[in-house]
Amino acid sequence: MRKGLYLLLGCVLFPLVANALDTDKTMSEDASEALHKHSDPVVLAPGYADLQFIPPAAGKYRLPPMGRAENGEILDTTGARHRLHEYFGDKLVVMSFIYTTCSDVNGCPLASHVFRKLQERLLDDKLLRSQVRLLSFSFDPAHDTPEVLGEYSKFFKDDNFDWQFLTTPSEQELDPILADYGQWVIRDYDDSGRYMGSMSHVLRVFLIDRAKRIRNIYSVSFLHADTVANDLRTLLLEE
Image (cartoon, rainbow, N blue to C red; front, side, top):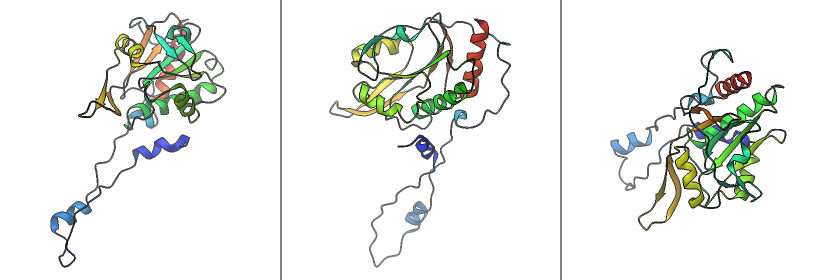
């Protein structure tokens, strides 16, 4: 995989038609129609494109606190145990919940794409670059081990920026954190009760200030590198 691989997720796919036909018969009209039918195009979230409006100037609006950013037991990419609050307080934080095998182009791949674009913007901002930390927090500890997250991070993270990739030792430690942040996740199991490696979830990205307060929550429709950067500048001016 390469950094640009996420772009492939937006391509239009053609359906595979596997109708068995006798060699002495012509293709039926239904089969012919199915062969030439295209699947519906994937509608990409706004975060993949240029911002379609001019946001209000930083500092000209308020981001009222929305609640406390809660704590929990986590692992970093070296496998070392930490408390989540160790990553809060010294910097402004943008945190997303993801899992690395997510196949929904408007889900976790969107969050990683927007974070990479945000990273680019912040690296060019002398005021913000040292004031912000990005956290990508996996909710699939069975697959997303510290080693897996370490490899995943290489496709997105610049060595000169503070972007951390986190997981948990187990679902038992993870689930209370998800509940505290209102992160809805349903793991998919087959009829035998075996985890299928996929999940149903809602994308939520959190903006957290140095007082460990949630100041914004971005959904698919509102997650964009430019608006997040603008909100970060607003919080910095507030300080």
